[in-house]
Image (cartoon, rainbow, N blue to C red; front, side, top):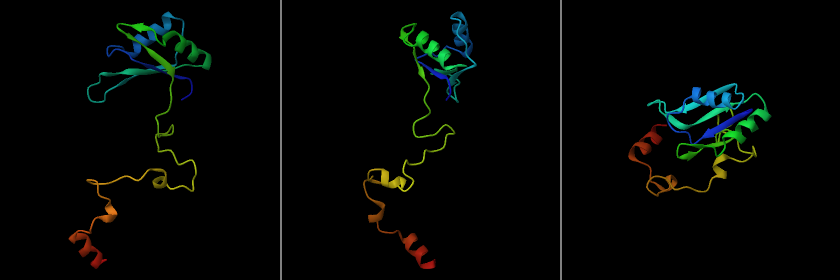
Amino acid sequence: MGFTVFLGNLPSWVTADDIKQWLAAEDLVADAVKVIRNHETQESKGFAFVEAPTADEMQAIIRRFDRAPLEDRLLRANPAQPPKGKDTRGTPVAPSDPGVNRMQQRPHRRKRGGQNREQEPPSAFATELAKVL
């Protein structure tokens, strides 16, 4: 994610322009600011991402805004992390050992009402379909 800062615990009224003004008032530079919003309501989800041009600028933004008071809350600022379970392109991450099947990595899970699928008798439809095939 480069030099991106996660800025969290924001009140819902905060806009990207507000954050840009705060940065400018502190002589801090950001290439871009994106407040994350609910797709349906367009209301802020309470966090934003700030793209800094350098690692030093990113650290300066974090130092200034982490635990900074705003209204009745403390802001959170830290280096942004890619979403868990996905790589940066949004596709599932491959297992660390290519020879390991993904199902082998998971603990055994019960399915459908606590019964394993393998133990369920085939339905009449499945039996008839198997005869045809």
